[in-house]
Image 1 (cartoon, each protein chain N blue to C red):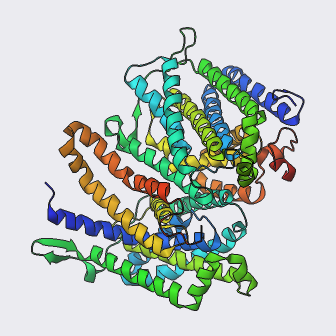
Image 2: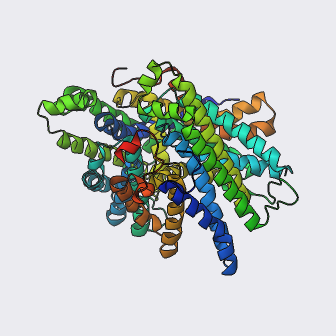
Image 3: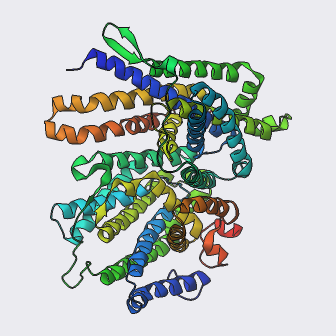
Length: 308
Length: 326
């Protein structure tokens, strides 16, 4: 039957996945909430961050150095994309935004393939984070994954401080609530947008770089996580950081734990042949089912950022 | 004006000329011994059917579905699986596609239409992903590799879909029928109501129209049309895979509609043609064709949003409120 060690390990994996999803989704939901911009190219920033870091790591052999260099470079890339394409899209409808940023995805996925080739790059975790920690007697868990959970919590806390306690955060919240009013009050909304977009790009890059040693760095790597992040922000409520945090953990846990245990669980209640056919498919559907249920009861998500 | 004026309006003219030219493709291809073009034109028409289907809710109803590839995939899987299990009867295929895609679109629409705007875009996307993962999870049918099969939907002994030219004309007929239906639909009371909902849903609700039900029915119709396109696609390729339902496919379908022009019935047909021809040309020029296509797409969205149909300066049958802006 169900093994408690495995449950613990998979729960931690789910948390770790959820934290990385949160880093990704936080930027996306900020951009959506404040600028009312659907940026499908957010996954491309995640991908670019990982590629920049993998390249620097190959040159220098240092993970930390790669992080330090890749983050500002991705910030600049994000700002360039914002200025070149997205700035003209704020006043357009969502359909235009979806299509234009879809074009950005096609362009960047292919650009990456041209520059770095089609074969994936691999990154290695820094030496001081390799190895396992003993959580209890006989239960080992990779230190690197544990540090990802910690990093996610730290970034979430910093974001909370930024949004709730600083002047920039106040403007961000005000911008999400009523953009025109903030503009009328004399805030340079364009500068604010660019700053928020850059911040989102950096958060996405952090997720991409930190996952580099676990996943492979390849063209199109941001597309899958983009869809999951859209599920996260829809469940959490568009524009709500708090909502994204809760929803990211829910999605991370449901997905990881579901994939690990649902097929086995089904095998106990139905014939094995059916369970092995249905299990994996149902496990990958779980988060979408969660989303459909949440939206059926709360069409604005769990924590709607705006009234109504 | 009557919905079927073939030459009176400029859109009618474009449509008639285009459909007639399409009908000549097999003759030209046969004369030039380039049967590839028959298959290519068949592909274009199949995606044109799907694009017209999507435009039912996108252009007429203002609902941006980012998940319509799911219905294409669903239709393809229905036919693929039916043939896999030895059911060749085309009428059975058609009935299954209509019932299954209609039901799926009805259920998905019922949830999605509780939301609007941005949420709607994302939820349709999420449901398409859900169906995509069902396909990936069907390991006995090849999982994410999909499966090939041998055989076609069979309607009558004299109608042999194995013959690529016969199949071409069947698809042509389905496209013509879809367009006929679409023109009738736009001019119908239902189509007018849907157009009204797009312009101002609150007002339509205020005058007593059950807007949710109207949108849901339109969504289901649109899903069925895409399902039929999927069934034809399976017949063409003899292959089904979850890749048909991939979210980028839904994106491409939106691009086709936009490129052609959202505010006309025939626009999506031109859009599908332009998209697939462009893809063919660019990908034969370079394997990195998306590197070129991405910026083209961005430029189209930024500067040519009204699509090919209005680029041809067609004033004729445009739908409802958007005509005024065009």
